[in-house]
Image 1 (spheres, helix red, strand yellow):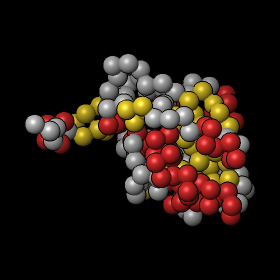
Image 2 (cartoon, rainbow, N blue to C red):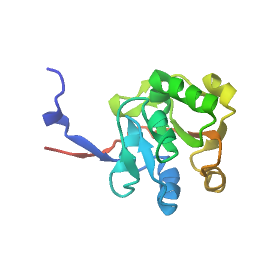
Image 3 (tube, rainbow, N blue to C red):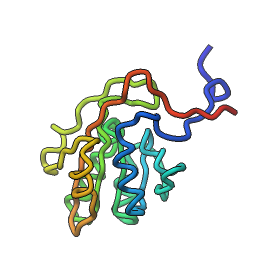
Image 4 (tube, rainbow, N blue to C red):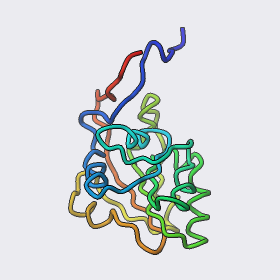
Length: 168
């Protein structure tokens, strides 16, 4: 029988050992309002962060943030699935946007299916690469400027980790 929401509950926050929590804490310290995408980035809407203003669907955070908060949080899978078109448009129009890509090489919320590395597809955007645990570099790079910028934050989901799950 297929898994149902009644069986699995719903996810409330990042995994306890999530490498991206360092980045989220910096965003929280700065009270930066973000548009969250589908996937783990949507956890930015929940406690303890509560930074997400909206989440519309896979790949939508970039276009929405470009005309609102100026900060988009998107995973590598969602970026490649449907976010690249919006990012191309943002760069073509030179809109001020900080696009933060959470690169973990998997679709973590749906079973950790492998996803391709988005960096080769972003060379035209000259993305800044940063390890998820590099606090100093993250603090330097997590800023909105007067032009589009892409920050790829690289982390690895720890084996055996899982989101906090709340049952119905």
